Structure formats: structure tokens, C-alpha cells
Length: 233
Image 1 (cartoon, rainbow, N blue to C red):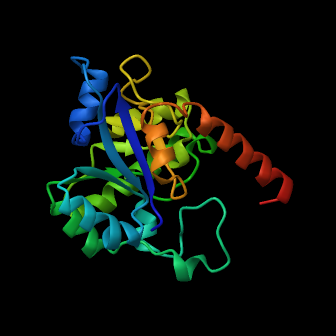
Image 2: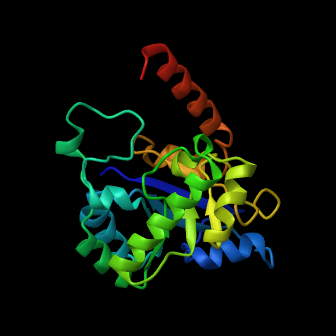
């Protein structure tokens, strides 16, 4: 399954997940929790979410959030990956709008925005960022009948200018910096997430959600950027 799964976590031990809006409120409004809380999120609306993750979430009654880049839904060839395998269009497919409508109707699942084109927003002008948010909102309104309140920065990349540009368009925004989210390091438009990788297994999963791998994501990101420069992607 190709999906970007993240956890927002606070303290110990590990309980059942919180609905996303409630988790955001605990982080940025309070009162601060006295035990660990976490939220499950997925990025990009890959077909695998519908086929594999959704049945598990439903079976265990686990709330989760799905951040959707709308152009990927409209154009399956517009894959939201920095580096695309040569056979990407055969192996990597989005959910359909019909599937997303079914998912959006499930009270367990929160639909979040993820721009239209899935660009690195720091490379765009303020007007272009506004266009990304507006086009995505228009597509959601037409296809689902509502505009998502919560947002995830594509690839988790943002800066203060990007934050200010997206603020009028959403109620919160999250990153992927790999830090455990706490009231001290979270603001409404910069909520940390912990990426969970397919290769982790339970051993690394536990370390991630307990905060023992804080900072690893920054190292991974630097390595990826160095690889891109060296091989010319």
C-alpha cells in the first residue's frame, strides 16, 4: 500500500487515536492532556488507502484523516511523488471521486486538503499558493459538497511566508518534521507529524510514536536532497 501515514503523539502510554479536530484542539487550545494522545493521518489518497487501510480502520473503529491532492484524483498520471518509478502509472493509482465520497461519508474519516497540484509551496508566489488552495477547495465543493477545514503541507515543506499564505484557507496545517507534537512545539499552522514507513515494523514503529527517533526525518530529508542533486533528478 502506498500511503503516507503519520502520527501526532503526546506523552505516554499509547491509547486509542483521537479524531483529528479533537487532537488539534488539545495541542493548540488545551487543556494539555496528562496521558499520550495520537491521531492517524494518511497523505495523497492512494488507491491502497481504500483497498487496504480503510477496512482495517473500520474493523477496529479507528478514526483517521486523509489529506487529498485534488489533481491526482482528476488526473491519475499526476502522481504526487518527487521521484517517479518508470512504471509509476501502472502501479500507483489514486482513489476515485466515487470512492472518496464513500470515505467522506464515513464518520471515522476526516478529509483534509493537500493543495491541487501537490507542489512544494515554498517555490510558489503568494498568488500561486492562493490559487492552489482555491482550486482544491472548488474541486472538493463540487465533488464532495464541502471544503475540508484542515490542511497538510505537501511533502511537509513550509516556511513563515507559506504559513501566512495558507492561513485564510484552513483551520490548521500540519508538517512532517518527525517530531512528537506537544503543546510547546505546535502552533495551529505548524503541527508536527511523525512519518511511519512501510519498512519500520513494530520495533521502529514503537520508537517513532514514543519519540525516540525525533530528528530522524530531518536527516532523511537532507539525504534525499543530496541524492537528488547528485543524480540529477
